[in-house]
Length: 232
Image 1 (spheres, rainbow, N blue to C red):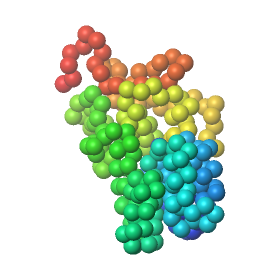
Image 2: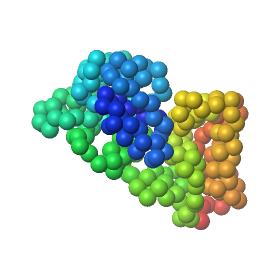
Image 3: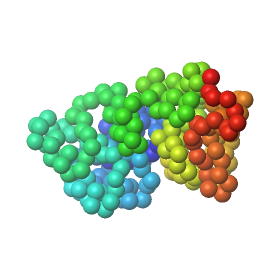
Image 4: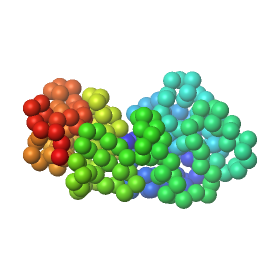
């Protein structure tokens, strides 16, 4: 998942980037409102974190302009102002949630995860498709009750596919959403990791949870193969 952080204070911007990257997110940074608008136009972001006190285009105006331009990604605003009127103004401008400075990294991650789930239509914090379950809180994955151990990238890949279960996701989209901008686009890394993830989710190939659509990408459904018995 790709997140744009728009924050003018370098220490806080770097702190947020570090927290999010350690949690497995690809992160793009902007130091003011003008850079932030450019980032929201140019980068395929899944979520934006916007400071209200930005130079250039102010945070509230940035949110309004992004919504007016048709950007529907979740927006989490950061504010040093603790007046309820300022928080209401941010929400009325089109933001989805807010965090008051100072904050803990755990709070940012929890709100980011909640906003991404909500945007994908999930109310339950556990992501599910067929026999597959992914719990973002414990970062544990189960298939038909069996714990599956994944690498960091495999986990992020599965999480993205679960958040878009039933939809066709191209290799280009996965590269854009899961890697930093300088990732080598000609690499077959995505194909390799999808193959590894598929084998880990079902070593016996009974359910084929990740379907390959030649020339189009991948689709996660978690449905049984026709003719096979029901999941254990």
